Amino acid sequence: MTAETLKKAIEDQLRTVFDPEIPVNIMELGLVYTIDIDEDFNVEIEMTLTAPGCPVADQIVEEVKTKTELVPQVKEANVKIVFEPEWTPDKMSEEAKLELGFF
Image 1 (spheres, helix red, strand yellow):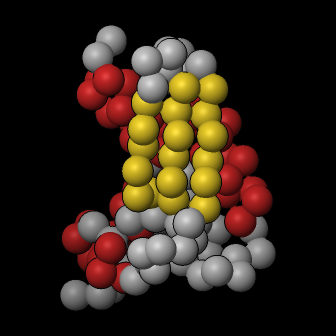
Image 2 (image 1 turned 90 degrees about the vertical axis):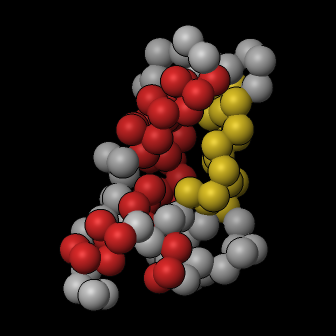
């Protein structure tokens, strides 16, 4: 499996993780900034939250880690929450904007 194929499989898994306050998955919301895969298939994910004080941040991080590690080739996943750049609604996909009535 190539790194690109593995990244796509991880992204597909992350499309099953939803922000509990917004009925849209974290990929469409634009919350995942980077997915890095090393030569041993360890994965480092940098993501943000829609609000810094999100009360379910730990749950989201754990779900992202768990779902990433469900991809057979992934050895271990590490999820890092970052707030730079700050998340804004313009990071959402057009599909998410349509679903949430932004158009």
